[in-house]
Length: 214
Ligand code: PRP
Image 1 (cartoon, protein in one colour):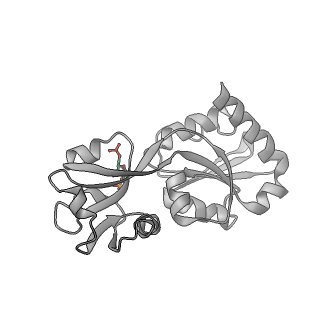
Image 2 (tube, protein in one colour; image 1 turned 135 degrees about the vertical axis):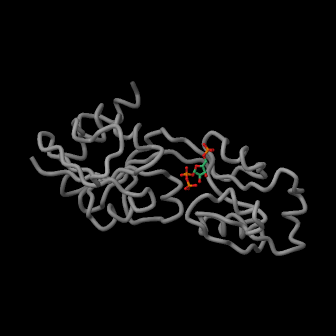
């Protein structure tokens, strides 16, 4: 059988992703529920191979054909707009893009356009789209993570980030000013693989649909 390569994100959604891939019959025991330091794992009996990648890199592996398929959050896809097919909304790891500021700050004043505001984010493109749609100019400060600390140390007035449980916002004394978009995990495919490996990808998408319906 033809080998199918799937890029899987490390971190929070990893466990649920492994469970789903196992239930769908495309991952064997080689892909352990605990993240290992082996970053490429092959399941010979199932002719599948998994690349364990940083979430923001999953679309890159798929777009360039290093992986046939990938599993990644819609938040990452919205920011990077890769040239891939988005096949399925897998529903889990649901989260929201939010605009937040220190709980003590006045949100009306922050958004009245009277002063240039600084916004820290991992999502500069989406942040600029949001503010330009409101006719507001902001300075976007790009960070790779721990965005919630930026207002505390005077690096930014507000943040645009994702929130899942709300815990990080709460523990850093931030309050939501606006809910921007929602996100959940998606199955994506390399455009050429989608055609060339249709015999493998088609039934897999069908199995995932059935699992989700069940
Ligand atoms: C994400 C996000 C928030 C946090 C929100 O960060 O950027 O910081 O999760 O989750 P919560 O609402 O459940 O608290 P992640 O854990 O990916 O780490 P990072 O800060 O390194 O980006």
